[in-house]
Image 1 (cartoon, rainbow, N blue to C red):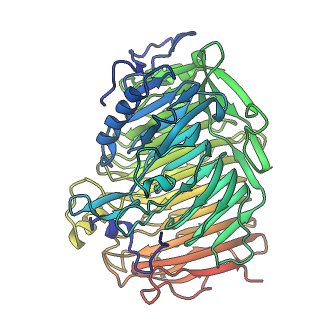
Image 2: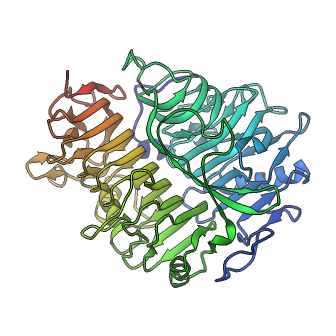
Image 3: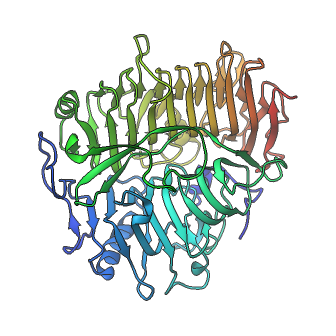
Amino acid sequence: MTTQSPGVRGRLGRALMLGLVLTTAVTATGTAATAGPPRHGTPEFGPNVTIFDPSMPVSEIQATLDATHTKQVNNEMGTERYAYLFKPGTYGTADQPLQIKAGYYTEIAGLGASPTDVTINGKVEVYNRCLTDGGTSNCLALVNFWRTLSNLSININAAGQDGCRSTANFWAVSQAVSMRRVDITGGGLSLMDYCTAGPQYASGGFIADSRLPSITNGSQQQWLTRNSEIDGWSNGVWNQVFAGVVGAPDDAGFPTPPYTTLDTNPLSREKPYLFVDAKGRYNVRVPTAQRNSSGVSWGDGLTPGRTIPIHDFFVAKPSDSVHVINAQLARGKHLLLTPGVYDIARSIEVRRPDTVVLGLGHATLTAVNGSIPLDVTGVPGVVVAGVTIDAGLKESPVLLRVGNRHGRNVSTPDNPTTLSDVYFRVGGPHIGKTNIALEVNSDHVLIDHTWVWRGDHGVEGFTRGVNGDTDRWNTNTGRYGAVINGDHVTATGLFVEHFQRYNTVWNGEHGTTVLYQNELPYDPPTQAEWMNGKTKGWAGYKVDERVKHHTLYGGGVYVFNQNNPSIHTGNGFEVPVTPGVTLHHIMTVNLSAGTIDHVVNGVGEPADTTRVGVPVYVAEYPIP
């Protein structure tokens, strides 16, 4: 095993070095009905949701999953989406384990009320992708995005695997991948795939509400683990954050190792999950919000919350029009988005309090004709989970708006509007344009794991090199990643990358962020095009000068100006100088091109090419 090498380069530089569903599986199919799913039996989840039963032969389940992995393992910018759901029971045996590999846009989830209701005797894994020399070298996890594992137990069984592969359950992933409500026994969990050729880099990641064995962090640059129980943690690279984790390492030696540990998590709300009850009926469990909590939510029984029967949801397919979806929401239905890509030419409008919008299999909403794909009005308690939102060819003002920018917003601290595993893309699979990706105007909002990404690579047709990067800068336009205008907004796992002005700008009072990760844009052509007035560049994290109270735990801003390595950015972080605004354990990192002159407000040495891959840390700001 290795930790991150000092020669690490930016993701684009590193990356450019570079179905079958068996008839015995239960495939939930059917056309959408405006009346919603049936009250009993299997809902009509469509052709890309496969539901397994423990009575099915392990060999057939294995073949189904292997066939999808073969299709999806390299399908980074594809349109296929899949969800594989396991009814309560046990899958795999000591002699015939079920060993699952999850590719792009694949969700693996149990259908129990508790993670212990579904047991996989085997593994659920993600390996490095080896991008050159016929799949034998340049092996890394830096672009292992967009997959989900949740609500099940894994009893690790490596029977049939070689010596190295048998040493752990490998989960070598980067951004937009979540592990939630997972109970792992029988071996270790490695967040690094150390069984391939190098360089083995990884850039995750997120774990929540899980009970886990000893964990090998390995090459993971940053990671957030919250509200979990762990037997141990091996090491850190740049920024490993723990919030409400039983067994978390102590952070007294920061930055050696680079741990940030909060005994409790300031605010949490677990992601809604689909489950089958004792009578075979499908429901969605919507957990309640918790403050200053630690450990798993299911250790003493059912996760606290409310249960919504599936017949109270409109189960949408990509063929359904927004008009139909909005009519169902207006009737009081919740919304379940089955796997696929939805073209959204007018906003999906969420106007009722406590509405749940739940995506399966990385359901994706794509803006058409400059639309706002998802618009949540200023009502309390809305939960949006498991949805990816893509910018389209015509510029949108915003991709997801929470609350009214100038109108009335109603909120409550006990029932925050919550965004869980909501991801954004500007470019990548196609050209994209937006002014803002995520805009939060309501008070009392929880952002629980998001990746807000202006694509640094993709299949839009740009050439490689300087000219291609300049084309990307002028064509895939995204000015602001996350704009937070509401008060009392909390973000746990805020990953924002490559936007052309402020990646994150926080205008609201009493904001809290627990782990922030940012890469500045790779592609500004000139310093003149990367200026904020007279200031060189735009900080990766900006708190407005009028804000009096704000807290950040564990934040990193990285630079890789590959289009023009001479470019400077003045500060990684810019915040008002006032006692109520505090930053704990922050850093800037140079990824081999460009310079960040200071960490925060003129404090901290330059992150330049004399210290590639070596963070410049500021332990506390203001400095005591």
